[in-house]
Length: 396
Ligand code: NDP
Ligand code: GDR
Image (tube, rainbow, N blue to C red; front, side):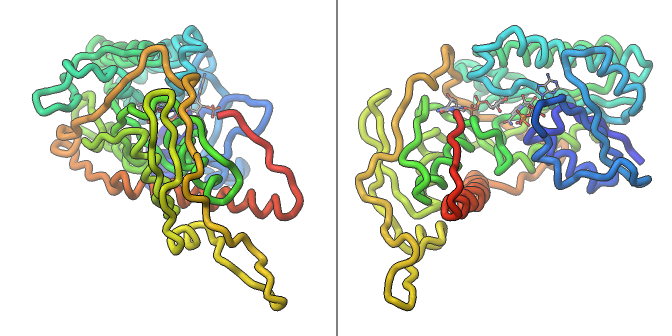
């Protein structure tokens, strides 16, 4: 049985990757951080009793800042494959804690590579490093002749996160060359899912749109609506992580859809899923979004808020449609970044041609999947409210 170790198993990608590897028959070890509350929501459905002799998912307490802990875990697991997905992964937050990000996202990668080397596992263990399109920095002059970023594009990170990840990228490449290790960087462009962290822009939007449609929230505040991203589905991207480690030769790979979309258009698409057409007015920090039209049939189907009348002829559920002209979005400059990556678009040709990667999701399918997830989640809040419970607000 093949053995895999996943750092960041409790995150979006870690959870999908663990599912995939378990399906493929792997023994999966994961590193989780000690937290004062349970932090395993995304993998609780995979939980296996440690007393079960056939247990194939085992979690270890650990942290990428602790080399002794990492070395011990790797020694215990003797993994065939390590997927280093653990990171402080929020670009905006990295401006608030740059030193910590350098330690976890940069040096954390070195700790994994060095542990494998010191334990004499260089010929056994293959390593996947979660690198990122943030390394390209979105500079227009660095695109290839076809207008995309690819494996040969120059790197120019624009955040403490990007700078820490560029260390991870180069140290992975260096260990591959210096010690002949099978270590690869996956330069993955943005990928999202219903399990995406709530403060990344796509999830923030789909959560807010679901709440607005269900009458739980009035509006959403966002930052730069002009930013363009190449958004794929996390399920397609974790499949690629696995494929990268099965290739004959250790290399670095760009994974992307090749399509780029503005944050504003993502907002339009998300509202579209509940039958609401949004109109944007104003510019820059003055820009706002208003309800222009509502498709009654689509709205009622999505929210389940159709008119129901009881035997006395009284409506028993919400009947009114969202008000045309109502403000549902404002720009809040506090979400702007000190340095922004304006546009990302990746060229996945190498991965498609050499590894036969075929993504299953287009952006419209991704938005649908995320809206479906958040509508289901928020409907539970509606039920809680109806039962007299309070719904607390969380910072985004
Ligand atoms: P998430 O933020 O959802 O997950 C990050 C994971 O890392 C969590 O399990 C988190 O644990 C763990 N982690 C954070 N700090 C530490 C630490 N000090 N020690 C050990 N583990 C830690 O990220 P994603 O799943 O979206 O991304 C996975 C990886 O891919 C990350 O490295 C990210 O930077 C990179 N990436 C992501 C892209 C994307 O679009 N999603 C694109 C390109 C790269 P906890 O749950 O306790 O917080
Ligand atoms: P990103 O993702 O920085 O690309 O990093 P994020 O979703 O945070 O931002 C994408 C773009 O949206 C703009 N934006 C906002 N972003 C957030 N978070 N909140 C807002 O309110 C908001 N309004 C506009 C941002 O300015 C940005 O331009 C993600 C992470 O998963 C990284 O770990 C990964 O490496 C890269 O993708 C590829």
